[in-house]
Image (tube, rainbow, N blue to C red):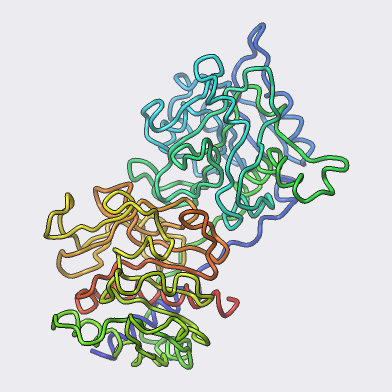
Length: 505
């Protein structure tokens, strides 16, 4: 049994090491690229910015071909990028670009649903914030909120977390838009302090979009309206030398970064590997790593105690140097440790706020304490809860739905339903803040993340900044022995993802 466990976790180690990590987006990523720019017909008395956008793309070295809504999607063949303007009649365009294996960037909100980038319900899944109808909301869209400097598009734009102005205040009708993507998307920017109103969002190739559709290539949704490009903010002159002004007037940078990210090579899933030949790699990875395991001592429940003991034996068998401490001991025990694991055998009301601000990477398994660790909001049974046998609205569950197959935390497994445990039981759910990277949701609960992580420096709940990598793995107090072989591989990948940041990998 021990040999089997080591082999399985070795697979996770190898797949993590082999997974392609996203290279920084190049400032010149657009240069030499070819783009199909799908635009509407200019109407008398209704000017738009399509011409300005074409000029801008060409100034960045893009070879632009124009197309109309009626043209065949075959025109996208051989192109590096498809761009769909808000001026296009979405009813005529339909879903013809939904399955093209070419990156797509669109600010046509009515096409979000046709592309499966959101659902199809107007003002619920997406909206166009028309100035005359939504006057106050339209004016509020001149300010937006950057989720986190760790998000790929934000990184490419050099945009930190916080409020900024994407648009210059205008007396005209800019009619910006927003969408509500799935948990598989990265939300970079949102409006009105509401993460459900994403102004900039993106899907990696293969991630599950609406209706469980895998993204055929990278997809990006933007907030522009017909006349928004000309009023995108940009820091020039003396303002460009002032860091706070650069971060405030960042609309043009975000637009450009979204295009550059879209045409950059996508992340690749970890390849499937034969597990037996890589046992030594896992042992090498674990050897010498100091792990603090926080649990409850003297538990009156045999199943909980047996699960903790099996978990500890597994960690030590891999070569981790594990120190187990009781939940009531001070969190100064974390000093000098490479990793801290908080077992679900702990009690939220006893552990309190301990370990929430430590500088070491942290893996949390106690579902009811996620708010104490700044991982989700504070409302129990609204922001977080569990599927269980008690009074939950949601029944016990042993499957999760993997959302991002290209992410190292997915351990090379494909998107879709994944058997995490052998039998149904307690499974944690959270309404995850947009600063996280959600790896898995719960089947038939599309807004409930159950396995997610934060990069160091990411924005967590209530604007807390992650001091190091943080991860929620949904493993209740009795569940370690019930993990499937594949589930143990997924957990192994989680431990190595958290630890890899500390090692500079």
